[in-house]
Length: 176
Length: 176
Image (cartoon, rainbow over all chains, first blue to last red):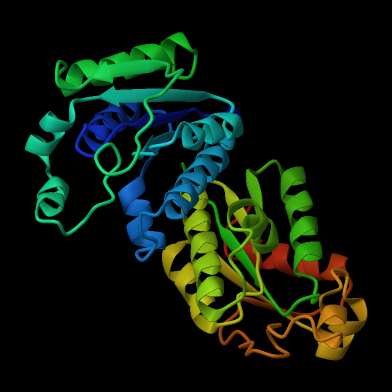
């Protein structure tokens, strides 16, 4: 069984990670290849609802996602990971663990993300209820070596999805 | 892709979980079916070396193993989980999450386990260094509805392995 790939989508909150992961997932299903979409928020909700957002907690969650990616891709599953994963080391660990790895950096100005705010996270921050948003209160490190960079405020989700798929094909991770 | 199965091997420390998981894994490899062996201790060491052994920590680790089993089996992988998983609810959650589930209860008197003690855990307890061994200091709940029960002090590892494989075949989880 050939290894699947891990497409690791990083970006600040509301930059479009879940949207693009969902669209790529759908396209991969249409291609008939095994796929699993691991959303960092869902994994938290399922496994560790009380984990929180300290540096240590984020490290724990991204480590778990990387390990899941490693395990699933080892058995031929193509894995989408949508995770803020604010530190370069979070993505580097995943890259180290997963043989067929792609880092997808979503870039979007904070102001645009604050306007989108589908989860109401920035609204909560504005009310002073939370103060641990990466890229606002805590560091978010842009990827140094991403295979794909998408500026989601200047790109449609369809274009972003296509860019990810094109790169995956180019790298031989999915059928051309 | 047909679902894989999850063979969840429970028992107190030194009852033979890793040994039997390793032998079943080997037999499944020989059968040519996809297999993953998730050892609770290894998962801890890889993901959460500082997790500890409180009720909450054990709950966290068994939940993670159940979730991994669910994910991998969903993609056709046969998963072995070797975990003390001392509470019936730990195994019941895994059963609920994993469609093709088998609980394997290893039974072995504490005294025999203390003599075996390959990890030196009971020796550490005797020196007063640890006091959180399930079945000795903290509760270990025997399975109420295990598909396979093996008395490892009266059975060779080969016999135990065969009992697990026979049941898996009977349940239609692996080719007859």
